[in-house]
Amino acid sequence: MVPINELVRGFKLYQDEYEKKVIDVLRSGWYVLGKEVENFEKEFADALGENVYAAGVDNGLDAIMLGLMAAGIKEGDEVIVQANGYIATMLGVMQCGATPIFVEPDEYYQLDVNNIEKAMTDKTKAVLVTHLYGQATRMEPIVDFCNKHNLMLFEDCAQSHFADYKGTNTGLFGVAGFYSFYPTKNLGGFGDGGGVASKDEELIKKVKTLRNYGSDRRYHNIEVGFNARLDELQAGILRVKLSHMEELLANRAHIANRYIAEINNPLVRLPETAEGCRHTWYQFVVRVDNQDGFIEFLKGKDVGTDIAWKVPPYLQPCMEYLGYKRGDFPITENICDTIVNLPMMDYMDDAEITKVIEAVNAYKG
Ligand SMILES: *Cc1c(COP(=O)(O)O)cnc(C)c1O
Image 1 (cartoon, helix red, strand yellow):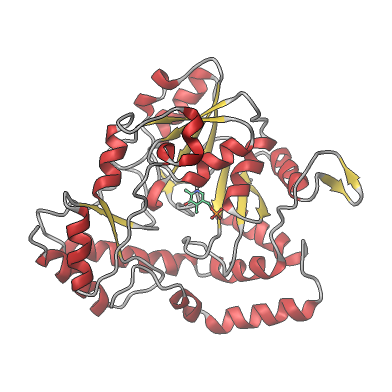
Image 2 (cartoon, rainbow, N blue to C red):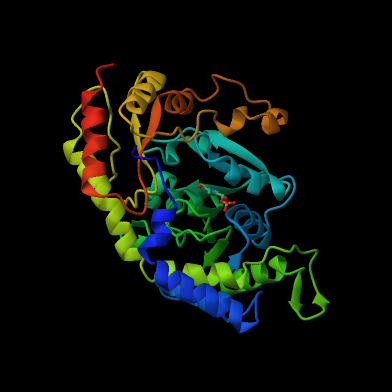
C-alpha cells in the first residue's frame, strides 16, 4: 500500500536530531517561551527574507486570528477569501468578529484578482490570499489591486512555506503572513504550532502580546489577550526541521516532477504551475470527472488518495448564517467534485512513486 501520507517517515529522516533536541529541551528545565522559541522565530524569519520578524504561536488558526486582530481587523469588517480555501482561514476571520466574503479561484486554485472588485462593499477592509496546495499565488496584480483600493493584504501560508512568487517568499507581500506547523505541513512539528511573519516589527510585537494574556511585560496586561503560545519542545523540533527544509522540499519536488513527467492518462488532469510561482507540493492534486470511481480504482491498486476537501467552506453548517447556497460558486463546486490528492509526503522511494504512476495510468474511467 502506498499511503496518501505517513508522518513517521518525516520523523525517521532526522530521527537522531529530533530525539537529541527533545531530550535537550526536557533536561533544560525551561518549557514555555524560552530560547528555543526565540531562536526558532529568528531562524524562521531569516529564512523567509531580510528584515522579517516572526512570532511563534500555538497553531495556524490562532496565527490567522491574532495576526488579523493585531492589524486591526474587527467586528463589522469584511475580508475577501477564495471560496475553495480552507475552513480554518475563514474561522480565523470569523474569530475576529469579521465576515469572510468569498470569491471564485483561478485555474491554479488560487485567489483570482478579477473577482475581488464585484465582491467588495464599503465594509471590505482586507484581502486574505491562501497559497493553496503549496503553490504561490500570482501576487503582483493582487498587491496592485489592494494598493489601489486601500485594502490590507494578508496571506495564509499554512500550505506554502518557502513557496515564492518571483523570488519573494509568500507571506511577505502584504501586512502579514500566517503559518501552520501542524504535522502534515511542509514545515510541520510533532504537535500543534503556528506563526505570524511580517516586515512590521510592531505588528509582530502585538502578536506576541496577544498570544501571552495580552501582556507586554510580566504582570502588565495591555490587551484582553489569549494563551496562544508555542512551546519549547515544538519550537526545538521545528528548528531541526527548518534546517533540512531544502532537502525536504526537494524530496517533494522529485515526487511531483515524476508524476508530471510520467502520468499520461487523458482522463486525469495534472496540476499546472503559473509562471513565476514556485510550487512546494504540499499536496499533489489531480482532477477527474469520476472522483469516486477513480478513488475506488486506486484503492484496488493499493494507492491511497484523499479529497481536500469535498464540501466548500461556505456550505458548512457553521456558515449557514452567511446565507450562501449550493450553486453560488460553480467553479469552486466543480473543483470539490473533481479533485483527488495523490500520495505526497516528506519521503517516497522511486518504487512507490512508480506504483502510483502505473496505477493512475491504468485507470480507464
Ligand atoms: C492547516 C491550515 C490552517 C490551520 O492550521 P492549524 O495549525 O491546523 O490550525 C489554516 N489554513 C490553511 C490553508 C491550512 O492548510
